[in-house]
Image (cartoon, rainbow, N blue to C red):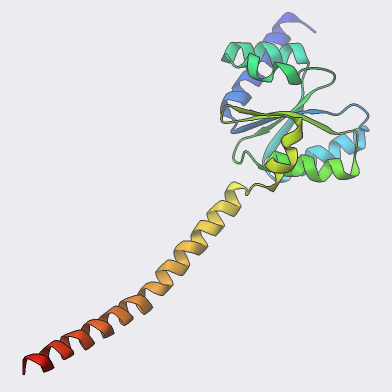
Length: 172
């Protein structure tokens, strides 16, 4: 590979890392081309980019960003990187689901908002709520609160009227 091409890849990877909320390192050795294409499709469905990059180029990109020490341990063997731009949990869900039927895909580690998660945390990460699920739950809570406000206000108003009526009767 030519030097200019390597520099471009390092620049591209650094930019992707910088724009990502979650970065997942995986080992894919043993996956067929068809399985790799299927995995990429699953990632694309949830807005995740999956790219195979040489370890030395990933390490150089991470060094340029000043975070190489955090992810260096995962840069062994074959490495592919999942970049979660919109949702840092979406890649974990895809990796977990896909690796159940394809043992060749192995989760190495992830970095979410600067926090590094090891290979043993995939289950925990994949069970977390995605951004969309969190928004949905929050909207549901707000909707329940807003819909119950008239009921609460009516009850308070009734109680207030009752109290005022009792006070008025006592003063007479």
